Length: 294
Image: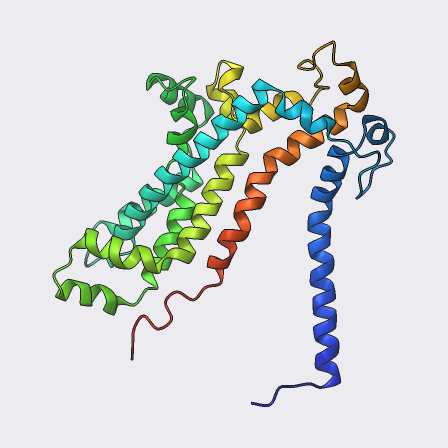
């Protein structure tokens, strides 16, 4: 097939790439600005001199951040929450979406349960009943209070079950003819073919756990149990020099509230920035191509 190399096509490609590059830069600019402030001196940041490049380069803000046991403890709580919460949610989403993806003739109450899950998206019990439920289960001030209330993200379940429904039915029929049961079909066929959907829902779940801060304030009575985002919410809204030792005058001269906040924000965002590129490739991968031969 001859490729279209007309002048109009070339202009369109150039304009397209230019617009995409501009949008990408606008998306990255806030992160670059925060990074530049975190590596700048306190005086330069306070004077508003920092744009997209550090002024009077220094790592004092990061020395301050990684020298805080409170910050590191909150970071560890968030790591535990993301690992346990995402693993549990993925397991529950997989085994929930599989039966809900079946035809009503195979699962007679499928429609009832599907609408029951959708109902929880439209209506909730409210803040006070949720707190009383967590308290009655003895989960206040525990990691499980941050994990179990959101263990089954219904929106992600809907995404996954719709992906299951689009898989070729011949695959399940073939596995049944070979004597496979539901669990074998699910883990040997559906899950491997659902890697793009699992990567998408897994990333959404991971980001949701990592960015959540309000439930930490709601369910935790002691600050040492705060996840990272809750800890940041309590310290970023005010100047945060209470963890700097008085004898470390040199560090205090290099810091300001802006550089300290910027360093904490960037460190908090860094894990997601690292994980996302590795999962992005699954979003566009045609995993079902070639799975059924016509």
